[in-house]
Image (cartoon, rainbow, N blue to C red; front, side, top):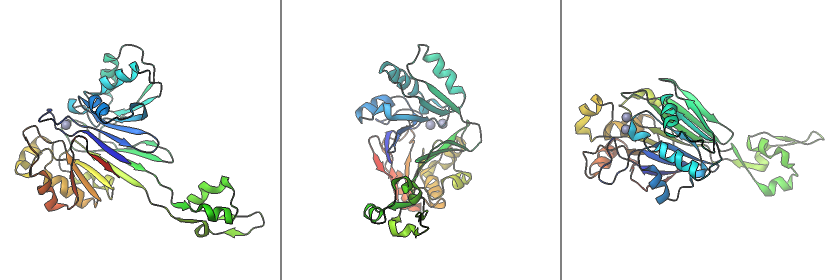
Length: 298
Ligand SMILES: [Zn+2]
Ligand SMILES: [Zn+2]
């Protein structure tokens, strides 16, 4: 998977930082995660293939996370999009979109309501799983976890030929099954496969106060995005405003034993991001700063 940051700012756009928006590219489609104002311009700048976006996940109903969505939907209509768009968001969002897209769009939007304080599997097929889980913010808010499923075993083409395994059985081999010939001989799975690379996972937690309640949902992910609106000297303000600090984001990453942490959603009070990485790195040693145009391979 590949993550592109379109916006990493907090509530107010500031110092060139756009509000929250990200694109997660999987092999089969792209997912738009939050869609703050200006996201479309950033998508154009980074040459994001917008018709590959099949899923849109909106964490909560604060404008810095969805004000760009109506523009995106309208543009997709003007461009003649035909593919269905799935939107996972609080129920209110569909009224807002309906009000602002009164013309008949050439594509279908399917809304999936996020229920307050509830965990849900939003989408699952054999390659991808999208889950939502509650975080702690001033309005109902969800974090998301995206898992790209990789088969348990990787096939060895020359061995498949050598043992004359029929093609219809390949996906079962990838699931770890042995092959039984018509005469009853068993071809052990290990003879024709090797261990697969394992699933890849990404979790997005914004906006949220420090809460350990999210740990079971994000445990061991390869990459965690956790908001860090403030430096830690403003921990009290972060708590009051239902946001987190650098140190808190890093503590969550450490407790959840993730491979890598990326922080963002910086307050507009900070002209530069000096100190953000240093503070987080004291607690957790693999930290990236979200910045527009950053691309991370997962
Ligand atoms: Zn926000
Ligand atoms: Zn918010």
